[in-house]
Length: 338
Length: 255
Image (tube, rainbow over the protein chains, first blue to last red):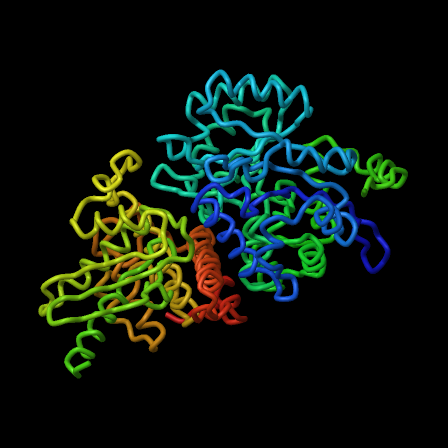
């Protein structure tokens, strides 16, 4: 919970968090090492200096540290956990649903557990998706269209195989499709930077929500264009938001563009924990104001009400969370910290 | 090192300075990607690095081959070796560029498109970005939209501008041939005319392209610096009030 100076409580749903294991014991090869090094680069390049961790802590921070950073020291009321398998790089995977389920078990009212699928897994993958829906009651999945698999260097969400999975997801009540379209892993020319596939599937699956993580960076321009045309395309702020510290001027402009093209109801806060911690992000975001010149030009403001939507309201809507009921529930439940 | 050698190294650096990262539309020299230039007689060796191990192979390949070509045209150069360091595809890229292969030949299983498509797409983004900067500059200098938009390329070249304006114009004219038939100085990326009364909306639209590139530029500098434990290369100044004023609809104009 974040409290404003006037005492108003703001319900925070962190739209994008991870619990990973990139400890030396779990790293399978050079790619695994370079992958976590790259994440650490993001962390150290965009965090305020006093928020920078050691590389050792960053590689594996564990459940208790995460609870502390999100819910005790941090302002998050709930968090959406998105898995990242990367089994080619890490022996037990980087950040699997099984790992995330540990946190869910300890904090059942706070964690929204998402699954994953890969259309290249054929029938077996569809069965696995059914199993995830049954065991974990997932309402969302995270997809990495650029992930390597055997000889394949990625896929498009508009591929026929992907459509089979999206149809299955819809049947299983998995409504929220988070797609990693951002600075990424191994993009060649069939690449994750291209956001055009979202345009197709958003039209063909009007009952699903497509949350484009990282707002399609580094293709923000193309993404805004697609998102404005599709009412079920959302933008996740992970990676975009940390610029609020290092490049506030650019952040203001990007935020104005997102408000202009996507609109205030389609932008979701996400810390991308453990790359960044939510406390400083939320504090800076709450204190942030768009320069008057920009507001005059775009006609878009970043009011308290809009901030509330971005920080929790929009995610609550697409995940079916009743904020008032959830507040009451959390007040009564003691957090199961061991 | 002889004086001649230093002069040649400077020539190589100047040639490399004209090679851009296609996504960021900035010089690979300014971005601090170049780690070494060696000259021995007519033999040149250039080494470079990128912000992450994962930087897209197609862009990496494009930069490496552009560097090779930019250096090869210097009259005294006999042989050029361009070597990328610390990247997941170092061998494929370095061998492919050394052998003068197409990207598609170097990456036969992955590449589905030759680099020319990517080059054109990003060339057009660069065109829009440079065009926007020049148009905003001209508007801020008080030129009327109807006058600006009637200019031919030759006419634009004759307009009297201050130093910043001349720089923006030169950068824009480098990319102008990519978009539609001459001689109009200002057209949209598909070659169509821009009507004076739609200019404000047009500029709003293309601004996303420049903003995107600036954002990526800041990210890449930060990642490169974090990766190699250095201070980030100098960033272009954050836009100040003047830039915001430039974005406002132009005031009453002089002709």
